[in-house]
Image (cartoon, rainbow, N blue to C red; front, side, top):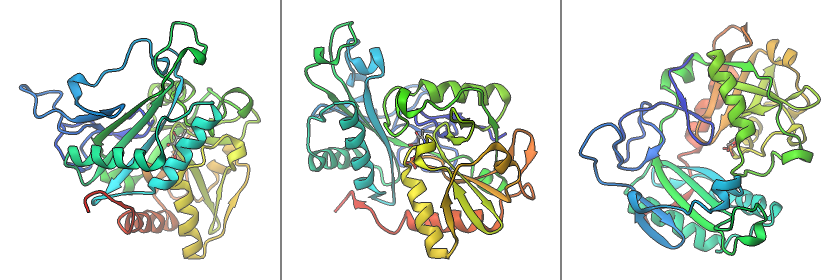
Length: 334
Ligand SMILES: Cc1ncc(COP(=O)(O)O)c(C=O)c1O
């Protein structure tokens, strides 16, 4: 098992001493410039809350915010590489869709949100890192009725982020299937990236207790939905397969990049129901997510996948993904 912990995104990250702009494999998801373990603290990170840029120690939300009381709100985790935000428009489209689905009106335009996000990164002097963008239902009373909440709150946190240790991208992850099922669309639609992540957190706890790096979540039909914060792909006889969104997978932005790369490489990719058996007998297996990026899996429920080493398609996929993330994106410092 990789020596890792989880970010709020569920992505597995390595804890380390924070340093502004540090995107080394051993850095953590953490507020920019923060020092948790050494005193005196270094310069605090700057957080955006509702139109203000505040030092971390002053960036606070009310205990009556329904984001805290009920997990009522939506969020995105977004990466930026080399001074450019990766797939910002796609993240904002998903954020707005999530909000619309839960009748939450984001109190600013996409253009204003983009500017607030870019300015948050600039204020923290970062070029590589991770943004957590949150829209909460806002302050209400102790009842859950959202009509009590007059104004949603927007929070943007810029952080430095580490991947799994680089070595894990070469050696692969181990996963287990967890007993916690992915909530179905009729319960809590997985397409909504809401602040209610307890379903995923419970799955993550199972992975931790089992000593695995990630947990494979099945849907009510017993088919693979996704991992706790990653989409799942398997490769068999030169073709790629992934569960459809209807299986309970988030429409991942990294997932979409894998489709693009597959098309570019001339590899057939199919959305289809996948069972645990399909994972066990796959030649290769990959997970994708904004923070984890594209990462191979080499063991599931104790079964070695393929040769037990990341296979050729996974390796090409990872290499191409790493090129693509540096190719474009929204310029932070113009
Ligand atoms: C439940 C879940 N599935 C999949 C993903 C991967 O999606 P993306 O590639 O857009 O980060 C995430 C992370 O956002 C997630 O939280």
